[in-house]
Amino acid sequence: MKVHINSRMVYLIAIIITIVLGLASRKLPFLPLFVEQHAGDVLWAMMVYFGFRFLFVRKSMLTAVLFSFLFSFSIEISQLYQEDWINQIRGTLLGSLILGKGFLPIDLVRYSVGIMIGAALDKWRD
Image 1: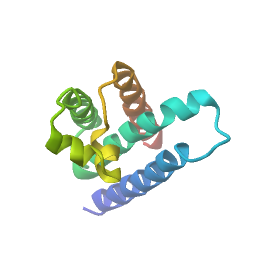
Image 2 (image 1 turned 135 degrees about the vertical axis):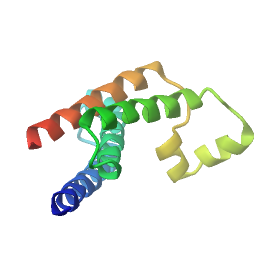
Image 3 (image 1 turned 135 degrees about the horizontal axis):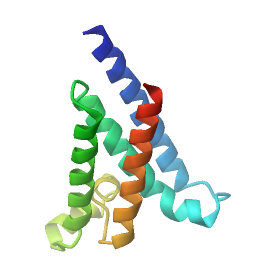
């Protein structure tokens, strides 16, 4: 049981660090354009991965990877749905951070990279 509590703490810290880095990536004016354009979505997907590892600490890494892809891709594809009620939610800061604003195919690549980096860091930790 103690191992799972320690693992959850590691994933919680990883989530917090990833959120801070993700928010900073959108605000720091000195970052290279490539980083500025891609880091936020990569870090968002890493946070999703760490979140699933936090929730399913007893499950395999593959489970977290699969859930992360399913969740991230579902959120992106949901952006094809444009109705007033959901666009009002997307118009808020929290809504736009979670749901995004519009479908971009490149985001699927960014999410894939973020999830794989998260899994690689997780594997390296072991």
